[in-house]
Length: 421
Image 1 (cartoon, rainbow, N blue to C red):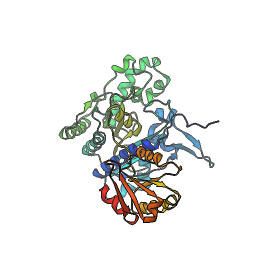
Image 2: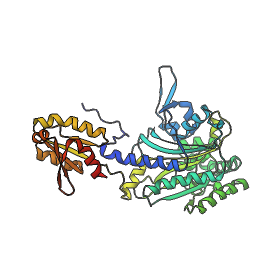
Image 3: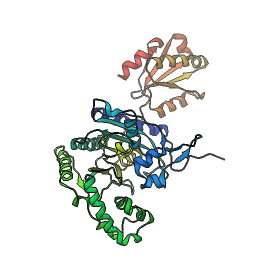
């Protein structure tokens, strides 16, 4: 019986990998411009980290985590997102004590959530994200948002919509929470069991519900913007002022929420068009209470995370072509047994000189070897026969022009380097 790939996962095949490399290189170069440093955290962590760091009322914790016990009886979970792990590392390694603050990180790696697979939503997916921890300056909010927009725009996407909102400070959120409870409580029996459980503990999560999103009470729910105190209003105004100065277009959406208790002030999403029902490309927000929740000092933070798989769908929808595989420099075609014996050493020496090359390993005829070279799209084919070996030369054919040049074997690397440049 053939063993198949697990549901909700995918193979990234050789012809697709170059696109992933281009995206990763773009992300690293952009983060360097913004002075964000890479951090790599474990694939699995203590389950308690995500229960506390993501929130035990969220769908992620309640329904989607891959959790298991190790041989020591410890509960471990494959990471479903990146922020909790980065903050855990920030606290555990006492990065808050370093002189350079805020601490600015980026990460890129696989995450795992058990959910119904569909286009743009996998059980194993790749997430790129950034976190800036240690500053409560609204300018850092604008910087993080601008980094996200520059990431997408730098890859050629144009159909983008930035949506922002403010969740206010704890005082504002408390007033909003009371209003939400009063709004939903009389009719809460009409909502799903998850929403009923969230009513008292975290009513903001009701606004995120996928089951009841069309319920009439959703559209009339109290807006957080009506409960912002003066400090929260000023903070949000400052963030918008920075975005306006940067000429970053945005839409304020009062329904955009982050349902965890430690999220406050700025929240944002970037939306795309034309690649399926799921249009959210990324999400982010400010989490001023998360560091202390995980055992560190009071350290405000903000970040975002995005799915590389959804990014690729958006690139395909807009017909943006990047990451075309780079061909190797040359292909060695052989005629005769003696030439075949000598070619491996010639190729070895070419590779030592930094020239990428390959040869026929299937005993093909010379015509079939040229067809293979065409499929590889190489700029040069080096033809070597027994007679050439005897003379110490090779014939180099430039595939674009059809010109052929006899070159001494000892000068082959220099010739190819010169003509490639």
